[in-house]
Amino acid sequence: QSVLTQPPSVSAAPGQKVTISCSGSSSNIGNTYVSWYQQLPGTAPKLLIHDNNKRPSGIPDRFSGSKSGTSATLGITGLQTGDEADYYCVTWDSSLSAVVFGGGTKLTVL
Amino acid sequence: EVQLLESGGGLEQPGRSLRLSCAASGFSFSTYALIWVRQAPGKGLEWVSAISGSGGSTYYPDSVKGRFTISRDNSKNTLYLQMNGLRADDTALYYCAKGNSFYYGPGSHTLDYWGQGTLVTVSS
Image (cartoon, rainbow over all chains, first blue to last red; front, side, top):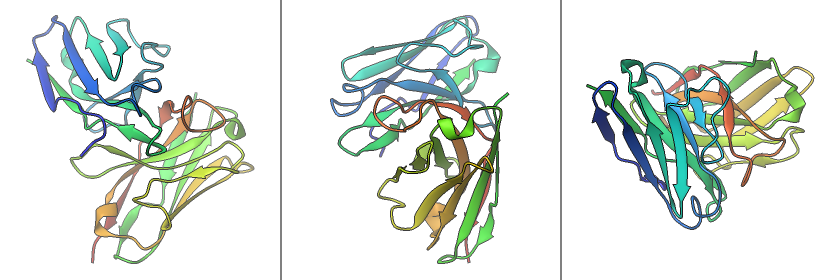
């Protein structure tokens, strides 16, 4: 049972937009920033978004992040088949004194 | 280019020990915290341990506290994870990852680079 709640799966057609939610509490998302990671099949996770909405160098602006209260959202526009992956939200939980991961969301581009 | 290369995984019996290594290059090693994250087959990601840039501060979740020990050798640019008292539920792909700050914790918990992982299987 993950501290952060993500939908197990989302899907959309190529070229469309999709959002992935991450719900937490005042001891985690409500207290500090959220990062998002993309894990393509058979590969290591890769940093996609940090500090709620900042993209590392090389990440296209099709990917965006936002945070409001105790929830965060990852948005992906102009979907491509290469975006099919598992996406994880991550933050720090002050009650647990631990970094916590969402359960992951599998994105299917139909 | 930042590179992290894990090694030391394998098949081990319950109750036994294993030591993982992570050789790093491409950044100022002692300046950044390093973290171990694991992923059980078909499951999500779980934080295993973290260590500050100097090695003076270490962090563990309750699931591994007292069994796992993280350490680093800044002269060799290498991170370690000593795993004792292995259990079947420790079976996972173990990744090492680089933090974006000297310490790892609230306000500095971004993992900006990851290795490809080393597989640990605990079974009799």
